[in-house]
Length: 393
Image (cartoon, rainbow, N blue to C red; front, side, top):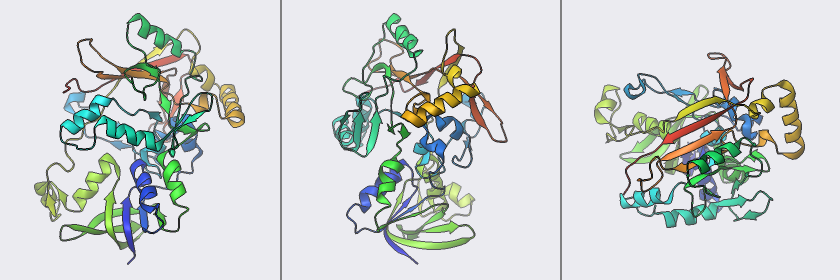
């Protein structure tokens, strides 16, 4: 039996921040339990390495949802990070604070303290914003880079389209006027992915009061009555119970409710049908999940795109040398370069669409083996629309 003040389940974006904050006083004993391994893969730190991580089961759960009637009985692929840093170690790094009215709506619905002014102050505290010339604003651990000076020339056609359609343009989607088309900022530092794990967890691990256990699965949360007092862990073939004053569940939108259900918190009838004695019967645990579906249009281009830079072998070598020498070039960027928050109708009070413009197209190869995403051998680009809700307060 080992005792801690806090056990944090999941070393993803949220768990990394919690580990840092809760251990900062040097006294509280903090254990972080992560089912994946350390974030050592070079593809994790290489921004464009996202394409290699999207299907790689070494770093990615690669979940598949149940077939959905609304999707013509198709089953969605859900990438989820299975590594220190969680999905923040394998995503495309677009950094968006969100639109102010969405936070105000949350508070109006009962989430006290989640209004935009309060949340914005928190953003300001945690961020260091890096301008194209390298100057910085803020002193937070999370670096947010403005890469508007480095995007592919093809992006100019996206902005020309906005102009022709008389749609708004914003200079900063994380600024005071975020609605409109613009260049996405990304969470990188000196050309490398700067996940919450790099910003928060790795510095916290230098403290003697912080312990990280990787490749360790949490089987269930242990309760004394209705109070969580510890966790049952499995590492390789051995199991043990570790106790704590508080247990914090931050295993993501899919695995957190799954662990709660295995521990006896969830729909009573479902748990009983699986032979699990309910600790708290609550039908909302594991329910009401909404995915953010998107429609992507792939186009062949009549001028060079990132495909021309990254598809041929010589192009890969050139980009690798440029990145190694300068930490710049196409390998230092996200595939999502431009986009924005736009209204599908001028009659709407707020933006209801998020747009992405990628100066690249790609093909998935190696299904069932070593699945990877490769740039196409011809110039192309992607225009993607991701609808949100059209009902606002």
